[in-house]
Length: 91
Image (tube, rainbow, N blue to C red; front, side, top):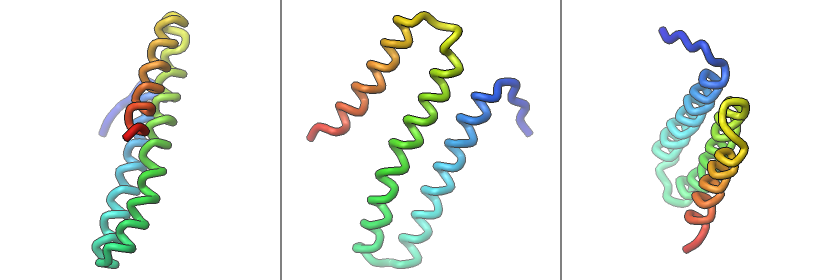
């Protein structure tokens, strides 16, 4: 189907596919149980999955770039990721 020469790109894509399957399973469970309380609990678990996947995929991407870009640019990327988490954690 797809030929991916870079193992890191493949790993990043597979983690995103896993995340999507978890999201779809959660949506189906919400529909199955049909209760707001249960749906809210399932959504709370998803709130942990999303950022975790983002951190892992970003880390894999940075590991793949480590030898290709300068240390200062890596610092800028880390700062950007930190600002994303800071921005979403503040009300």
